[in-house]
Amino acid sequence: MLDAAYNRSQTVETDQGKAAGTEAAPIIEIDDLAKRFGSKEVLTGLRLSIRRGETICIIGESGTGKSVTLKHIVGLLRPDRGTVRIGGVDIFAADGQLQEIRKKIGFLFQGAALLNSMTVFDNVALPLREHERPPEAELRKRVLETLELVDMAEAADKMPAELSGGMKKRAGLARAIIRQPEIILYDEPTAGLDPVISSTINDLILNLQEKLGVTSIVVTHDMSSTFRVADRIAMLYQGKIYKSGTPDEFRKSEDPLIRQFIYGESEGPLRRDNH
Ligand SMILES: Nc1ncnc2c1ncn2[C@@H]1O[C@H](COP(=O)(O)OP(=O)(O)OP(=O)(O)O)[C@@H](O)[C@H]1O
Ligand SMILES: [Mg+2]
Image 1: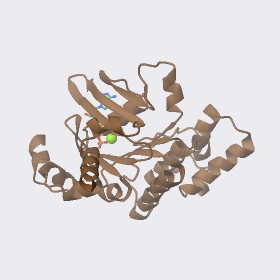
Image 2: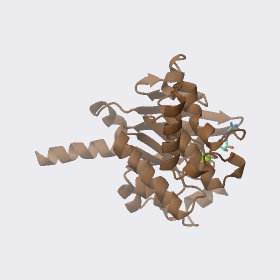
Image 3: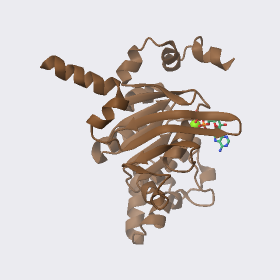
């Protein structure tokens, strides 16, 4: 009896493709995603399912297509082939629904992507003004509370040009979470931040998951952040998910490619492929 249950759970853990039908439907399902820019094939048939409420970290070398993958999930890029389903809806097939689905998603862009002509306050208020139009007093309260969360309340009236890289990142994060989205995509949330601010951001990612049940995809090079926040890790390599598994599975992996990436070794298959 116990053995049978154990075997079943093993199957669920290790063979997500087949197990998908036996579990609650994933909130995000990416199937056979392919994208090329000119002659450069970036994604070559990427498959990934993400369960509601989980935090998955996507890791991989620079230039492998991590940001490109996130941009497909919010519909900012259209694939050459393949599908992205969110809550069961194919976001590219259903023209009218992409806007609706996008509202459920918060996106922290890799470079923060603040509008330079607006203050931090107005940047963070933008999604509220566009989609909800709450009374000014409520808007003010929500923006300041969200800025407080990322320790940026004092910078509310500053212009983006006056901010450090870390402050821009935190302002971008405030804008991504202001509407309490169901899904948050973080593109390098801790890159370029000092360790204290990085750990505040990691805590915030965990808090949003615990308190609001948010589903998160975190693209990162930062292995300490990955091991702190991830329920699952997926490694992108040559346009596909090379391996997905628990942080523990990654830590213990004997696979040279994975070891080289997570332990930052200079010798190994990654280096050879780049030559
Ligand atoms: N809009 C675009 N037009 C042309 N090429 C693009 C475009 N967006 C991305 N690329 C190319 O696709 C490849 C993957 O880019 P992507 O930004 O996804 O990499 P990444 O994995 O996020 O890297 P990094 O870790 O450095 O952020 C790169 O070669 C990049 O130059
Ligand atoms: Mg990137």
